[in-house]
Length: 354
Image (cartoon, rainbow, N blue to C red; front, side, top):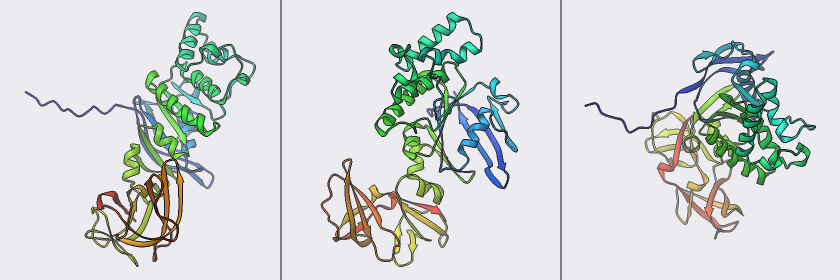
């Protein structure tokens, strides 16, 4: 009898990106980027402006051609297809709604261009209006809608064509903070409901972390790390990812047997994995740092602020060039000017190759 594995099956690859490069004159927008995007997942391309994420999205959509590399969809050459024949839809940052058309007509436009039967168009538009919760707004014009509702119309227009792949370019950037948080939940719900693979481009790490099943962090045209949000946060693979994803306390030094040896600070605790003497960074998140009378380090509280149920405490430590950040639940009992000890568990610190 053969053993049956209890491990969940990894979804198959829908989009394969292999060695894709794109240059604009002297500027290298993409430098041998390789990624796999799985069937049915919400995948995020995350990075600062100019990192190449939008260029990669435009290559998937067919609006740009790479200088080198291959892109496949279900194993077939995607680059061989012109943009209008790809089973891919791109939702623009501006939404690009037709102001003179009703919500229903905006959604139906792409289907009508394909000359689908009117009955089928009506059925599909009604279904997608119900999915995005806009049935009662079907006869309204875009100017009569809120920002969140216009975003839903743009999304409905994109998914009504039933693409294999939906690309979203900074889809929530035009919304205010409260509506953006609501639409993040809505996007995630819709993605699961319609079963389409979503690829979102964003520079907002909170947005990527809340939406995506996996995230590719990009810098200067290269992929720094691809991982699930929790793994990216807890185990960044490069100094850039460690500094870009969330707040982090970073220390430079050389690997010692039980941590990182840092000039002026001594040996800071962290689990190993690197050869002794190798240059490395140690990263420890603010919520993992403990305050107390005794600690690994001693410093003076420079600032205390309270926000959203969490106190943010900045501590200056002699020999370190920037304040060490501490996040504690509830109002803090310490005040600026107090001398405090700082400590953390070796399991809460990560070593990163320098």
